[in-house]
Image (cartoon, rainbow, N blue to C red):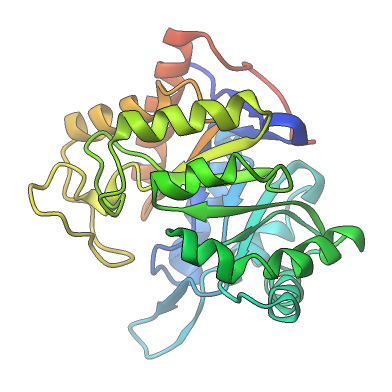
Length: 285
């Protein structure tokens, strides 16, 4: 298998593996631990988290997905891992508290990327804009390295280009336009990503597989942790589309098993070896 490659996230300079482990996967810590362990062995250094990502075990136990990440971080060099966390709170103080909650939940003293999460309309942007003050306050205090937002829509990907304080963008992109809130086509999202990329923003992608429903005719999304309904050929087709996008530094993917992780990394490595766009070896900044 070709080596996993790395990209510098725009002007942040933070180097991330092209594959990012998504944590909205409804796995208990014991179930998730082998995936994280194998990810580290394969060179994956980028983990995308959120305080709302949770699990419920068969024994009735429940908790947050980042419990497994916290345990895994205790055995690795934190300086070589890139962590993203998020807030749904539109207020400055609320966003700042979510930074503090994330630090405790992940057992770390800083977050690499902290994002306003799930903004999809211009009205969302206006409502959440005050929260940037809280994010930037955390950055000034060294608790956060870089700030940004996540969106499912072309609308907000375009709007982000007007706001240079947003250093990192997490956008929805997949081969069929699933879960893009009918805001535009994949080609239009790629055009918006190109602008952001050329401005020096860090850009990474979510919903590459739309939780296994990317090629369904129905315009629906499965719930978190839904089993992957795609064949290997379909996964190759879907991830091949995303990893061939020259404007995406990485893709965050929810892997529910070591086998899924290995498949995703193999596809990314093969596509990147073919295109030759990204670095063969690097470490997190």
